Length: 296
Ligand code: CAA
Image 1 (cartoon, rainbow, N blue to C red):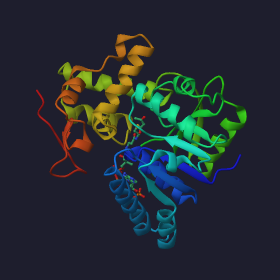
Image 2 (cartoon, helix red, strand yellow):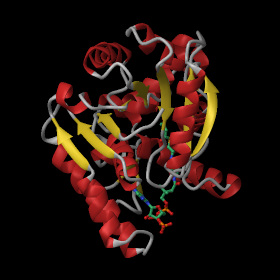
Image 3 (tube, rainbow, N blue to C red):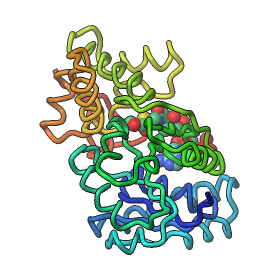
């Protein structure tokens, strides 16, 4: 099984990072988004990240240019996936929308194409059941920022063909990533472990045990995490964190995973974290050194 043409469906934070990594490694990438205004922003982000690599002498200028040439943008899904050997879906974290999308991808992608989802928590088996491609659907879960983070969870269902699994696992290695084999389960490994930590940090704040910066400092310095859990929640997006926690709560039938009240309050206020300028922290002055908000 060889890959040349990769279609990335969804050009948000994860989608543009995934597109960049494939394009940098010589693959032809069709980057699709339903919303036309998202595409120029995605390309601008990729350009900025490639220039950063050039200025750090991790990439040559001609390699950055070649990567950009490898990316074509689309607002027509059928055209975006027409030549695909692999489709990586990186759309909104909503089971109904993803199922509908996979039904369409099943109809529009070539019959040999592998369909992969970058979902953070939704069962791959549910997406597989929406298609006629049993065995050819897989989870390929990247981490933000995609160009930096080396991990890819490669998630197999009981139906996933061994040849499909091996091909996608090898492909992740070709991208310079470290793939890890994971069985299909809500939240897989990463978010089953990470989200309860973030939620517990938020509940710890709700209980008045310590302030936002203090909780983050404890975890950053005490546990050597690159970011504290509340800063990380802002980085991931509070909407994404709540969506994942709700999947864990429903699928594992355990209210221990119920999102902390402060997460739901911030979400209701439209404060989604770094991407909206405010979450646990305020990013308006200095996005690299945000200020903890007074939320009590
Ligand atoms: N894209 C590409 N590169 C980026 C980047 C971005 N958006 N942001 C930062 N970088 C690079 C910088 O260029 C820099 O590169 P060098 O080491 O070559 O100089 C490096 O990352 C470090 O950046 P900074 O010095 O600016 O900042 P930092 O040291 O604070 O690192 C960070 C930033 C890499 C994001 C780091 O804080 C970190 O690792 N945070 C944790 C990230 C994490 O846990 N991600 C997983 C989230 S969970 C997820 O994605 C999955 C899910 O399902 C929810």
